[in-house]
Image (cartoon, rainbow over all chains, first blue to last red; front, side):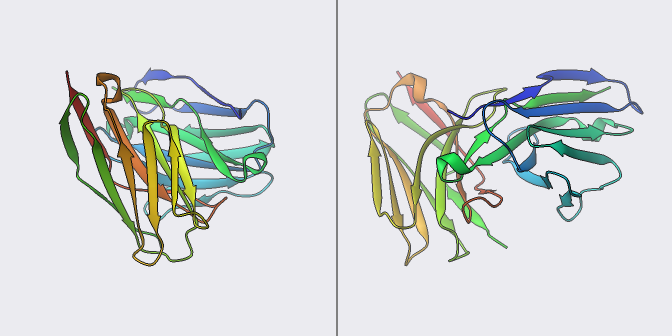
Length: 116
Length: 111
């Protein structure tokens, strides 16, 4: 089946630094990638939608200058958390729809970000 | 936009009993309804899904029902086992577009 590889799985960084999270579709072309954030004991909330070759669309309340999304190829989408603060600590998950699976969704394994 | 409500938020059952989780959605254009199981520290894993042209789907101990008129769908797990303990999320979407998730149900199966 379709696989989305997400790295890193865990990252601890200092306040003020930037962290890049990568999601790669290994066996299909991901023209769209959804980025979700999940705080402890809460549901997944959509942050932004990236489309290959165009600017990402951000959900209300999500700062586009803080969460930089790049989707430069059909197999790679990245989320960079810039100038991270402790309140950005969360579980970040990417997901891509797969046309071959009649638009079922494949999720990455998630990235646990801790900002200290 | 779409709004998905999920109940209950926690569910405790005895091993071997059945578990039922219910979700309602608001957008009548939604046509894809997956259910995910999420274990601690991991991404969601699809366990079953249903599309709007089907009323019921079953896969071994797991079944999902969909009532388009009432805009609700349910997950049924029979003969529950301790390894079924996890957080379960329902979701709704217009296929290919963003998923909107319910709030999650923490299922605990007691041996």
